[in-house]
Amino acid sequence: MADEQNTIDEQTEQAKDEIKNIVNISDAGPCKKKIEIEIPEEKVKRFLDNKYQELRKEAVVPGFRKGRAPMRLLEKRFGTDLSKQSKLELMVSAADEAIKDSKLDTLGDPDIDHEKIELPESGPMKFDFEVEVRPEFELPELEGIAIEKPTFAVTDDIIDAELIALRRRTGVWSPREKAVELDDQIIADVVLVTEGKADRDKRDNIEIYVRKTGFVAGIPVEDLDQLLKDATHGDTRKTTVEIPPTFYNEDYRGKKVEVEITVKEVKVLEPAELNEEFLARYGAADENDLKDMIREQMTHQAEREARSAMSEQVFTYLRDKVELELPESVVASQSLSILQRQYSSLLMRGLSREQVDEQMDQLRAGSEQQAKDQLKMFFIMDKLADKLDVSVTDEEINSHIAYVAASRGRRPEKMREELSRDGSLSQFMVQVREQKCIEKILEKAVVTDVAPDAAKSAAPKKAAAKKTAKTPKKTQTPKADSGDAEGSNAADERRKTAAKRTKKKDE
Picture 1: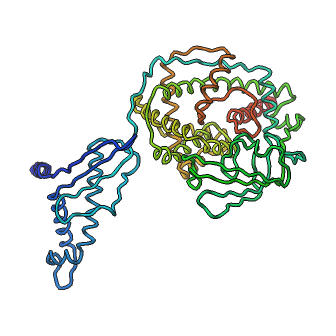
Picture 2 (picture 1 turned 180 degrees about the horizontal axis):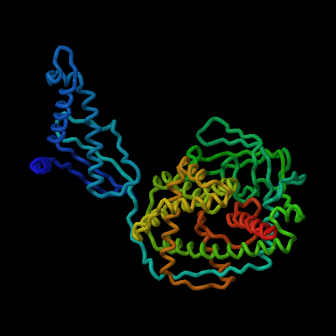
Picture 3 (picture 1 turned 120 degrees about the horizontal axis):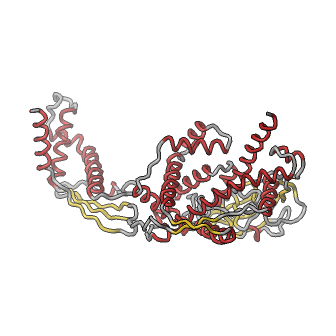
């Protein structure tokens, strides 16, 4: 008890003797704070004295016993290195203390230029730096939000459209003798010339899909279909693309890129034939049997889409009700994190690797405003999770991973290992936490059923405005190479249904 009391007394005395730094914090723009720190001369001197005392105990100086070297000799031999080390320690300690005491919720580490700051021979040590902080904002009312639940109807036309889409997804690319048309695929040689770089980046025999907004060697090209219209073997088309300042690839971010495309081959997608081989792939006896299987799956899909549309309305409500500013630097620095979140979301929706890669390309081409919207939603959902006291357990993560792994025919432990290795596991956890937040809000929402026509005209419009991985899709005919998540899930579950039916017949 006496020892404990002595320790308490010593800590009390140290607290009394502690010399406080002088700290001034001011706004330096949206989500930025400027922190000015003055470390009093007495504190600097005391810190240096302690350093020299520690050094004296351990330093080995020829001609002197350990711990007996004169202080003046130690200053001469070790003064420069000790001053540099002391400067860094004082700055790091002062910066951490200022941020902690001020309760600043920072994004990343402080941006301090240590080389420009010196440890003064006399007087206080002064320095300043800027730090990015999370935006400050208030969440809107979360109870009683008006939500429309679309009641999607699975009609014969939708079934026919899905069957066509299924044939296209299992189709093959065949050579076309005619000129390029929309939705064709071309094999081309590409040359990229980036602003500020002397070297030409040449890529041979790459695949390019002809769309309104397409990708050429990872570069987003608006009106690509018009650029390549009527092109044939040997034709060369050129354009210049201005890359957004928030583009994921730093090599091109905010620069102009000259794109030169030389067509070598034109291909068109030939849908698979509706024959016995095609029907057998899905365990269907005939076309009507396959349509029944599609109807069964799409009924479940319609319910998922309804839930997704309701979630999207919550996202829209939160996004419209919250006002906050984000500096350009924050948008750029967080772009990689956003892409990882989108990647995790696509995995959770059960897309194939090819579909994930394709949709990621489309997401990377998002405008600056879209990047800001996504980052804004990240901060909103993060604060929402804290307010609703929502957390995610390992069991829940493993459950979601198992679901995704099953939809892709993978082993859950292998998928978790892959997510951990590429840094996506933490983003996967964030995505699961967001879903739980939305579910909590929907539990207290005022939900009204909406007729199928209203659902088709209203819900997808809200989804289109957001353009994120959470966007629900209408029940429609997807393109064969569109990367449609629900279409992929539908095909997977049709195979499962077919397997169950085959098993029952065998029994």
